[in-house]
Length: 319
Ligand SMILES: [Zn+2]
Image (spheres, rainbow, N blue to C red):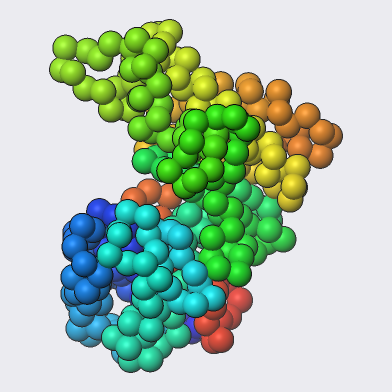
């Protein structure tokens, strides 16, 4: 990539489809966005992608675009160029890469999962910058993640590597919608933190707010049931982070997503319980830190993937 060249980025999720033109320094120059018609058929969802791409290709800057990066809700299959997002039922094995290539003038298209995209963004511009071995997690409605190994993003053959939300940390635990049992997501996601607090007798305030943010506020105010629900989530995250560190020797675990905004009520028990699980000498110095990239992380990460894949890539582009 030369200074003047750009990439197009698409961030495809269950609520919105965002697009951007991004320069080699990661600056967003043009934006487009549509709500995701997630309950409609696959062609209707694709029309929303076409509208977003249409705004980008209509920009006077489009002639400088050299590649397209897509970060999509998963599972994705980068080897086939298809996506099957759990929360977009109209797309199953959907040939998104072919469609986007057709709409973008046959540019190279790089597809990664959304957890991998956020990892790319954190490694390029966020808390994992400068680390050669990192785990980045997104803890929100679900739990996702991605890995940087040996200084490089590690998407794996199909673009899903680091999908830590669905490793089991409780062998006989609750069934998870993925088909497994005792998954990290089933214990640590926002909706499961709120569900567990309510089941254990937590009472919402006069406004009746039972969101994870309300449970977090109650925990900060010292409510023992709310605190215990965050503690349990933190324990599941700690066990999964320790397991990852033991497997591939990460130096830092970065936690983003809405649940991470709970702050100390999550991070304090997380760092404490990590000491119970990360016991071997080579994992004891692991750093756990909040993510730094914000709502644009998906776009920035998709751009990073496009930059990293480009044959024209020069020093300075994200690896
Ligand atoms: Zn699962």
